Length: 277
Ligand SMILES: Cc1ncc(C[n+]2csc(CCOP(=O)(O)OP(=O)(O)O)c2C)c(N)n1
Ligand code: SF4
Ligand SMILES: [Mg+2]
Image (cartoon, rainbow, N blue to C red; front, side):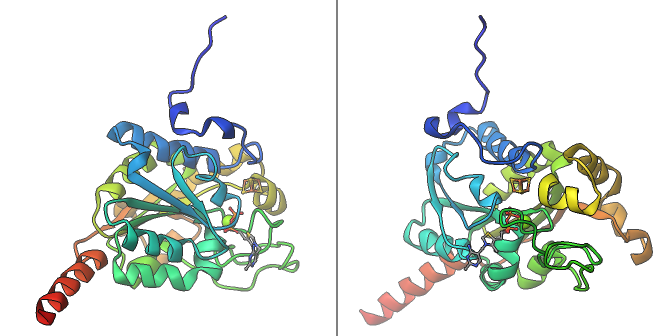
């Protein structure tokens, strides 16, 4: 009998090799794409601390990544991650959590971390819904969608999360879908190397709470939709708002340079201690 080992298995905690995700969930693709980036960079997970909030996507690093992982409270992973980064300046901190966690209850932490340009990577799994709690509408739920909390159709406008984070001051921002797993891996590598607040939005399928209710169908149908409706950012820049209706703009949207919070803080502390002497 030939026993094959998954090439990324050494990054997965041996006691946690069974997933709680539903079949077809995009979280598995996101997890593999992220781990593959570490593998390609030859990085040990010991260099990182992973932080997640509450939701299905929050289970991506916890307990699976064989690393230091903090599974925190709903909406608060960026607050925990900020504390970790300030206490352990030598570590790279990566938050992986859901659209509800990061943009609804946790929206304030997201925009202020972006404004500070604190050195961390935030990966937001945007499945357009609260998956884990049974399919309630989120700030990312498309208008008109019937969910259990919008039984007659959602009348609320949708957050464009990547644009929100760019406006708030982040210095590296990208959006991919689970169909673009290889691009996602390459972007994770860049985000890890970037000094400052890096944000990656991953448009991802929740076939159970989203696909089933909206008629978007199975995981495969949803990924086909991502393939057919994604537009690279460069092409999107030449398209009208009408042409962009229903499209997903993908790519690395921003790569900028700005003072980073922990470095500025260190400079301030040095100055204050010199002045006190
Ligand atoms: C303070 C608080 N409010 C509400 C909840 C219930 N709750 C848990 S996860 C969640 C939404 C998760 O949605 P998302 O972040 O999009 O993750 P997904 O499950 O879709 O991956 C909610 C409302 C909670 N755990 N704590
Ligand atoms: S409910 Fe949706 S997001 Fe949660 S594990 Fe199932 S498919 Fe994935
Ligand atoms: Mg969600």
